[in-house]
Image (cartoon, rainbow, N blue to C red; front, side, top):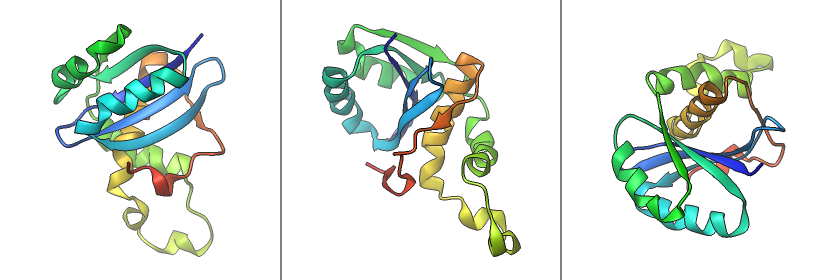
Length: 145
């Protein structure tokens, strides 16, 4: 089976996750400018076997789906209600606070630029009804593309 792409669509930027269901692993998690998404996915599709694309059904779902229509892959709109809110809690599951950092308010550690990618992860997990882990090579400092 090929990899899945999940997108949390937005007007100016989108969260994007690439995952393998059988391994329950996320191999890429990025935030990308909406105008660059089509080219990025086109290039990705040339090197990866993409089986389907799951896209959050909220803001700009239709516009982003149209941008990706060239793929001739199944594009599945899926419920994304409250994913940004839930992404804050999931952030700390993925990146637990340790040591003396417990004394600092948690909100200081959340980089809002990362929440779109985590929202895309939540859409994926809700769609597949399983939790995914991050592949060891994912560097959260480079999520913004």
